[in-house]
Length: 511
Image 1 (cartoon, helix red, strand yellow):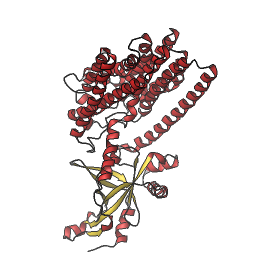
Image 2 (cartoon, helix red, strand yellow):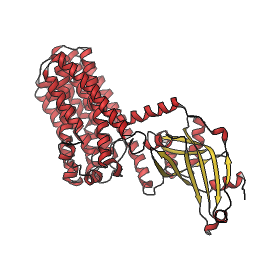
Image 3 (cartoon, rainbow, N blue to C red):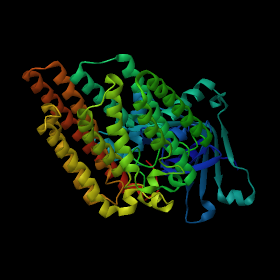
Image 4 (cartoon, rainbow, N blue to C red):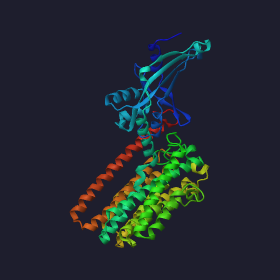
């Protein structure tokens, strides 16, 4: 028996969520998601912006949704299957209408709408190619399903669109926002060289910058590959994007393991090549620093060393992305060493160590299962909280001592304005060390402290170099105070959103 369009639409209207199935590499992935559909069977979904699952959702032109409506008599139960193609909705009016309707089904969308935070969501539209309607009683009798086809929605493969998607996947794989770990110490070392010696060579700075960035990218990508090989990222269910759990590109089938490995090798070759050119230009000390950096990054999670599993990974990250990069940037400019870049880099080294350290808390169970014995795994989450407290406290002590000893500019004391953020992060870690969702503010605040303090130290040497007047100090203090308050409020907003998501996380149903 064939059923009309209105009958099928009435079923969809009375069901809140669907099983959404997509192709992920060679696998099929499914998730439960709230949905809304219009009269033409266009289906709308909501997801957090930048979520890797969202990219994976629209990666393949074919997306299948299965809606099941249960009845007391199982024979009367029905299901609707919609096969279509997914797109991001860009039109403001269409997005507004979709979110308005989705808020009636999804408690998360409703909360974000009421709090004015819908801008954190992507709206996904699935255009139908085929709709199938089945009633269990008819299936048992051998009757065929009701099928509605939309041939006008069929589309040929668009190679340019595929290339754009692949580029987006690589951007997520590279985790570019975390490149501040490289940018800050290089800027710091270079600014110290200029402030103390008056030397600044833009060409040498560019080479140093590119070498550091490429080696950092190679490290990010190779660690993703070896975490995939060990099964670490695959079994990690407590990760909080984007702070822990890797990029998820391999797990979501958006990049193949061979693509990731090839990308890592490519970035290491670029970084090493530029590094060797700097060695030829500036001397063997650059070679020594480069060897330490490459060996640290290449074998962070891979054999024969696997520094992270030996419990020294955190220390190596601090040394490389703090002390060695600052010293290296200083040496490239001046061909000499000095105590100032060493002392000034200590707060940066401690903070980047704290960033990695706090990001290890959500990965605790997965790391422990695969034998990745980070410091957090070795100490246990509760005891490890004191390690975080020590790292953050020592950061501010090192700034104070550096200024008192005349080895850091007095402007560096402005870093103290971030102390309230650090205290809030410490309290969060002490209280929520075993709750990944609740730990999100600490992850974000630690990164914020690293970026702000690193920038303050860099500006301190710039100010010292140009002998700026007191009025400019006051203006800069005002700017940084404003930025700190703004960032604090943004982190609080993200915390509230994460808390809302946590309430519904256990249901297994997406937005």
